Length: 299
Image (cartoon, rainbow, N blue to C red):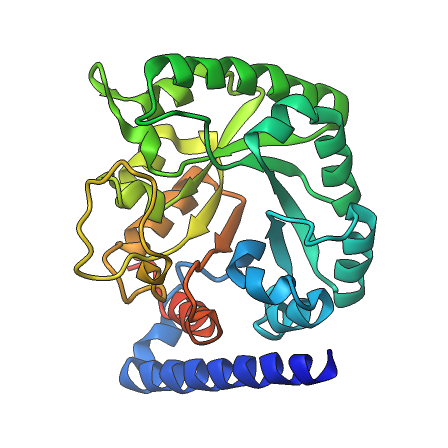
């Protein structure tokens, strides 16, 4: 365990050094950044899935890596073999707060009380689901069932537990429907009192949508965001809801207009921005993404 911890710390340190050098170069080349207002002055949060392979082996040391990157806000998508109470004790010891807890659709619907109790134990304000059961392409019938489930469970979470339910898009929801998409149907068909949304900007962009335009369209329905970028050259327009994980690249190096997304999100009042990097290069890319966010100004 000690040897493993040293290994992941060395990798993390190397990533931080590279990001620091990159950021320093940017500052030298563009000193006017300091005289302008930063577009993203706050610290981002982190999705646990980014470091899933590390969490599976050593939770405390992985939390140290996250903290070493200056991050104190986390969205857990997994308990990694711990109880919620055990995981809460670990994040408390590191000065990290869990603001959102991600679960599967079936658990949300069939184990609502257990999900809610775990979320409360972790200290989360949000319960998130990232997917809707569907056989092939999402159908109107499947979307309408999800709407009914989300409205029912969202009401329970809000009224009985003080939690906010958020749905996270995964790309397949953008099937054409009438003058829009099934995603539009889901947003407009759910009750704003009980159902909010988390926008994953890669899983909006990959199926051919404009994530900034979606945020502008639905505004305050969005509470949280997954910050990601898609490798240049990757074709978009697919509704499959999947692309190779190494197509996730450091923010600002891919195809997505991150600045436009953040401007829209700031206007809409999003509460949490979580970096999610599904690639095998997170030790290098996460520090690069954080450094990039520090270069963005409001002009």
